[in-house]
Length: 74
Image 1 (cartoon, rainbow, N blue to C red):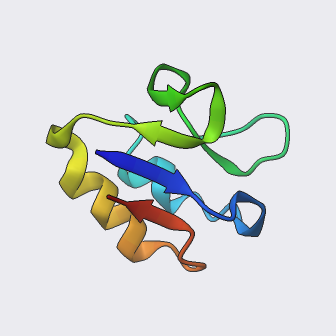
Image 2 (image 1 turned 60 degrees about the vertical axis):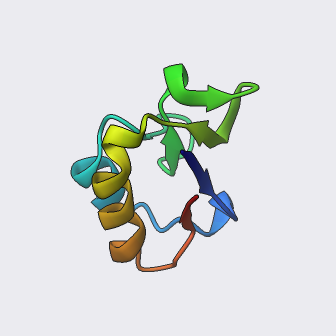
């Protein structure tokens, strides 16, 4: 399953995604925006990830709750 933060710069740092789904999302200490956890990143891109299907429900909850709709689950 693909998970993307796009555009990541629109993140408001509300924390919903990393509290709903910490296996995929975390707060970046560099800019306090959401990012994909390192082990799931595609090509080292902090805004693109490949996650196991078992995390789909949590990822979708995070996407549905994102106040700026930047989380995309495919």
